[in-house]
Length: 503
Image (cartoon, one colour):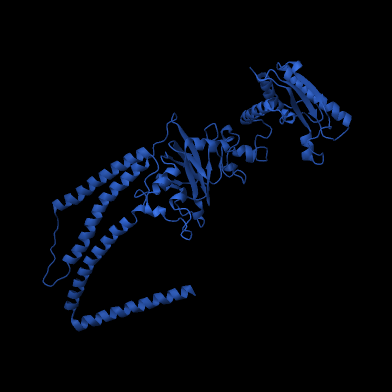
């Protein structure tokens, strides 16, 4: 129905235009061709002058009215170190091309008026004028040279890569329909390698987990945080179609191309809070954010830096928006400490994990830190229950007291703790679930506790500081009613019997 109405409208307009043409022809026949031509020329000339004034006035009025909504004017000054370079380049370009625009606009319509058709006027033909040729060749050449040279200087400043010895943070932004996946390096400061062939539902970036650099990489939630005053290098790529990594307030804009990684480097110089306080000075930003709630937060209070996609990448293009917060280095460090490794939390120990049977260096370090903190807490505890710690990563071969190879990492942490607290005496206890004969379970638990004690004495821990005990299935942590609970009950633990802080 809509298409039919549109078709009828087009047909009606066509009929009207044809009728106007016929009326014009009849008018020319009645009044005479010469008089009609003279009237038309006069009206065209005056209308050209009117259009010149109205259009040029509209350009200046609208530019002034919307200057605060244009990037680089009003409140929206650049929030990055390189932004002022680009803003200056655009301002100079605007001034030079604006002068040409105004002159050409006035000349075009003034000439249309001045040289309108008049009786007894003849056009003058000028074949060539060297002076005019020189002017309209030399002037644009000089202006273009200025713009190009400044543009090249700006490009070399903005697009220069980081030096290896610079203090910077590198993150990765991968565009997909319809989202940005942001990846941070872990404590090693390096992003791990990727291989698109490794992409799965659980590993959307195709991270190569045989590369140790990927083990501590972080993929946070929807919010992006960056520290103020620190150089940021962004790796930019895409998974499906062309996207564009666009941070308008930082003057950052770079295509995200599938199979062709790009990058952009910038340094945020204003935190989100500082930018909000600058907006607070402007009347427009003191209006309610929600017009239906006059008493609610104002526009400046709700301002956020935004990451957008500047390409029309599909119907869900609008959902590519992400919030970016620039904070102090201290606040960033605190947030960063709370982020967890994607590999260790999402992949480790699952089917996609290529390192299932290995204990990784990063796990060894994390376990050592956690173990040391737990021992310190147990040593200082006054409640007897808090002085018992389970050796979570000490395991034995099935049905025997033989320690598995990976148990040494946890036991080495215990050796370190005992050396750090030379005044403590501990009881090493073995426990089993209730599967099998209770007497055999008791014997097995005692043998396993003895294996742990032997490992410690072989590494210089005095036997006088160790008490060995097997409890079998007599002290379960949970009911033996499921595989999960029975696994909890099969454990080796130690209890601090007395403790003296190291001198």
